[in-house]
Length: 353
Image 1 (cartoon, one colour):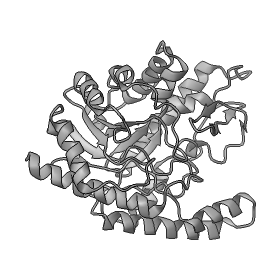
Image 2: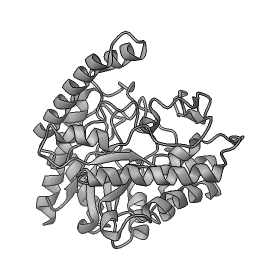
Image 3: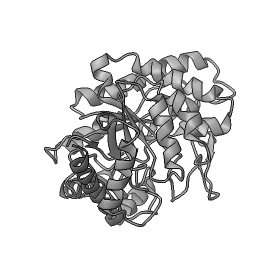
């Protein structure tokens, strides 16, 4: 396809897997049985991805505890009272915090990629968590004998390894999940926090060659959890001038859920650099209604009036279930939206080329 189209990542887990994950957490199921059910969910997810006609797939994050916390799953040196992220509907997510150093990832994203590649011949993309998000695990009061500077040095090394291992394992590309970008502007309207996050992520990206960075992208959205967001009230006009300073080749942006799409397109056009491609979200993951291919075609054609089709791609606004316990969207709805995205992208391509 001349207009590239890719998923963001997560797919709602089947009920039997959610039940198994809960039973395992309660020590009511052993790891062997959990692994068996996880493999069933993974194979079914990949099969259904293939049936949509998607040219690029993911593992649906079936065995990730969440898009954000997979690197620290099983880490013993954690306390539960970390940063709280409030959502518009009143619920919140709370990150843990580390209690001692040195800091190392317990799980690398390449482990999910390697498992998925066993079940498909299609290109598989891999999502990784942004270094800026993991930086929030360091407690505000510090850690005796382990300075913040030491933590950041360790963290940059681990974040680089997370991306590099996925590239080396044959990922079609690697997507950095940077959903805290808009949230940073909400927490600090001066943009000081966002600039710190951009700098951290660029320090990781600087460790890759220009050709490698063509296969590295950044996903940004206002959060998507239980059909609610944490920062949808923050304007793209404030975010994008800084976001496009990231030295990545691809950007995956929430778009279908935006009310003023023309202003978003104007901001993208003003700030995107010649070597960058923007994948706009054409399916609203917070809305249970499945968009028609014709509606998606028209969204793309409108975008192509302002952004060169050579720099344009399509995606979903966000992952459909970034946290394992998020069942606000059904698997059937998620795959129906993905199929519409692919068909709508083809319809737009027929008009544009």
